[in-house]
Length: 309
Image 1 (cartoon, rainbow, N blue to C red):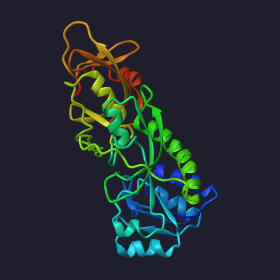
Image 2 (image 1 turned 90 degrees about the vertical axis):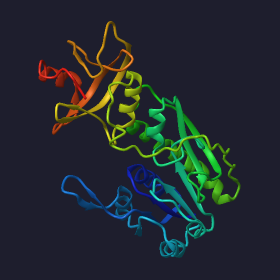
Image 3 (image 1 turned 90 degrees about the horizontal axis):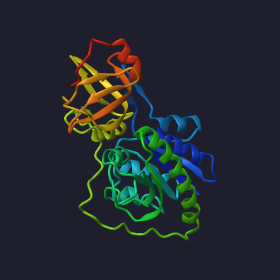
């Protein structure tokens, strides 16, 4: 079967690599335009574009699919489109450009967590289960009928980055199961159960990633794990920004506490949080430095820092 693949970030690039190793022919790749990367803001092709170019596959770079781009897709002769985190909604003329339409891999158990950042929102909400859904794309926000799902348990201490890596591999497995059925015409998608009360998975902002030490340690653990690797949970030490990459909640402290107060112990670095709870810092990144174990940082900062935020 001839396919068009649409995607942009590293997860999409990994899925494209799996497609290229399979029996189907990827005749074109759609991705977003080159974007500035790094401190020098060098214009750089997306990870998906880099995989496609290395494989000699024609690449269409566009931040939205207008009628001209849809005509390019139609001219490829592809029967089906596979889309993974492309970064833009497709209108009907684009959905209808390919005979079998588009199949989307989404990293949640739809209809829960429709939107741009399902993994981060799932961890922040304290969900214990998530998964991958493959569905037929329509004009809505992840509202199309479902071809299949693969559930998985969210592991304790799992960051968004680690969970996304697992979900990417599960998505590849699901895609490889569904594609032969689509090619043979023996699968029909099942309509999603409508639920207007479910929140959308909005992309986290740097403001959302700012740590408020008045929140409980349990909430802050979820926030820190969800924000890793992007946009990273952060607080302040004086005038300097200070990232926290990994932490674990320890429950209630004994005695009175003041949110944001550091407790430097011989083998642990603790912060007092809201509701009288304690958070153990595991990995941190001071301004201008590489990530490091919190204990190593604390030994160097002993006596110099007593309060965060």
